[in-house]
Length: 275
Image (cartoon, rainbow, N blue to C red; front, side, top):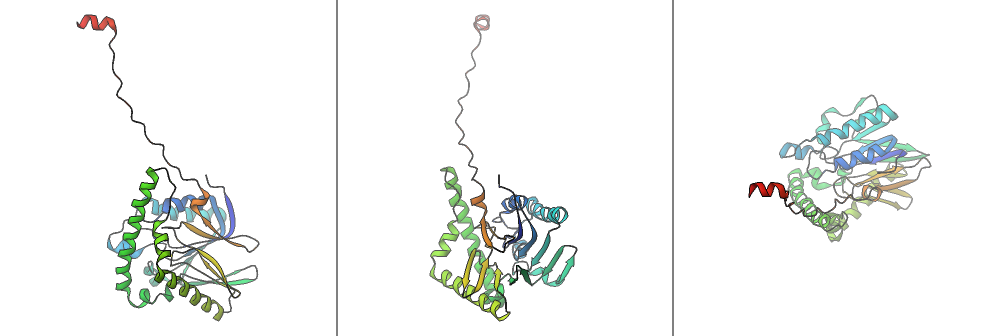
């Protein structure tokens, strides 16, 4: 079981509810044990792109929103939902505030005397912004990579090995991906600086990180497809990345032993009568 904790702020992004790759069950378990005063859902929580095509909405996806309602009701948690590129269907209803839930395109998080500019990050993805059809074509390749990741981990599970993100490893080894991540971070830092902020909080690239750029703090919450990560803010202002797989031990089911069919032995008395 995950040790229960209560934080000042939790930031999650890129859950992609409605897709097979979404780790909604793990996220629900995480949020039941890690509560907060403020929860920032930083984009791509619901994958509208996939749902329009061949995605499926399941009970575990609905459970996520039930947990949000429970957090609001029990802990008076303030929920800030930032629109991402995959949940761009929210454009028609932003900005919207209902009780403790606010839906908007960006947000200024003020905490411990510091200002953090919060946005999903797709604004700096020219492919996603200007060539949506090409982005969706790339999404097909990414879906295949996640399928490969699932097959690979199923084999590891059978061998008694823990979960390992093959897809993350592949992306981090590709030079163009590494270069893109670096440029993405620097552009967001420039934006935060132009807005006189102390830091920027984003998602989008599925790459959790906390990094300092000449006094500007870059924070990325990662995702709940590959890294299963979240940003948490402690009450003293410290930020930390929590990984679900570090918080719980992989429950590897024991290998089933082949049970031989029991031989039915007739009592001697019955044997005699049958004979």
